[in-house]
Image 1 (cartoon, rainbow, N blue to C red):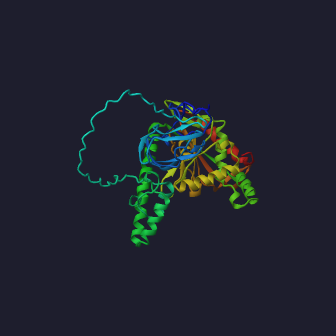
Image 2 (image 1 turned 90 degrees about the horizontal axis):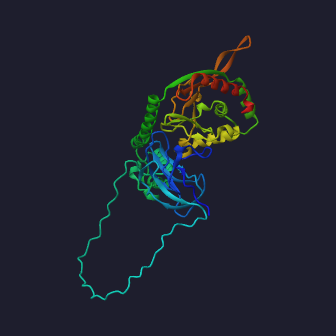
Image 3 (image 1 turned 90 degrees about the vertical axis):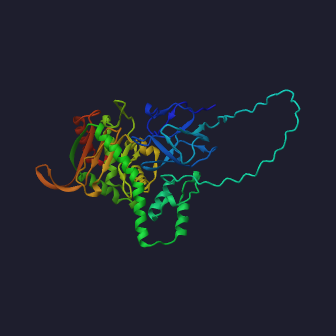
Length: 430
């Protein structure tokens, strides 16, 4: 009879198995509140997307959890039957708290038998006196106290922000009273057009309310990074002529939706280079560096209305460029609409930040703990460049590295940047 493992990840993990010890919880058949970023201590369960008795598979999204970064769709990493929900929507619980129990397919549900007890002969007693109780008034309905952060699905939160609707003014009809898209749309239909001043003020208030917790989370992570991590920085100039020519030829033969962006080549080059420089790919925790056997590259993405997230694309070194580009487009679209998956947030092993589209020549990024490196790309700008004995104008990109001196050093960091450069000169091997 199949059984669920006695140990399972208490936070999302999509790398090779078994995951590192920091990902495991000892509870049998339990789905626990995951850790969704550095410094996260607790999360609020917004809604359940599955109900008891539903069959679930590895990678299914079964719940939405609210953190300081926003509403995150949480995946499950077991295949089986969702047996029992242990936490009600709206509850804020610490990381690692069991949220639901899961049993393997084919495994019998745990049933507590009802045992009949022979009480022996029963003495006959006189009938009890009947006393008529005074009528009791029906209790008045007392609405629950308002939550500081209204429970809402990611799509509902986004729609409310776009339309300038205050979520605290809505009554949710979703699971546990969560606000869903239909609640926002219904409110907009009833409310009708508003005056111009009201329209201008409400989106600003909504954006400020949503952005504040995220800015605090970013501030806490970056302050911790600069306080604990001994950063060092390196930069290197790369000639992008070969990559640009190859990319133009590749895209000329394809439809617009099938074309690649330079960012896909850069992301793949970083991942392949890390295969030879593993000390930049992993986590520094508990006083030691823990290398990762998988390369899950966090992609820094700006969020509409403000804020920043760096969710992971998994196993970038193994992805063909076309597949990598598809995943990049899908990820950027979801994140900018406020939709995250738990595995994307919790398990990047290294981060890449690209501000080239903003015209920045170079950037000096800050490492996101517990990672040990972050790589930044600037804009491709025309610069004089020596080609043999001649001088030519070439598109030049500045690539920078911030490294954690506890896990790696400048000598190896320099070699890593040179390896990235070499791969970009041979885009056909990507």
